[in-house]
Image (tube, rainbow, N blue to C red; front, side):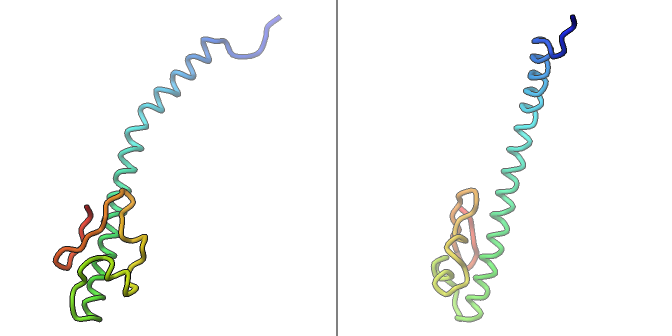
Length: 98
């Protein structure tokens, strides 16, 4: 009598093919995640730069650091660090991530 099902060789072949496909996709996923972090940080820098301009227009001088912007309500605490862990710094009226 013939039994329905997969042989061990067929299962090993399928698992091997899936493993190879997974290993080929991991570098692409990591590259995309890095790109997303970089673009998110660049967008946050633009937000901070806009807050610096607002602060200067309303107070007449540049903020010393991001905490001046937080204290005056231009930024929130969550906006002082990029998603990749870099801190936002203000140097000569421009925002930088380090």
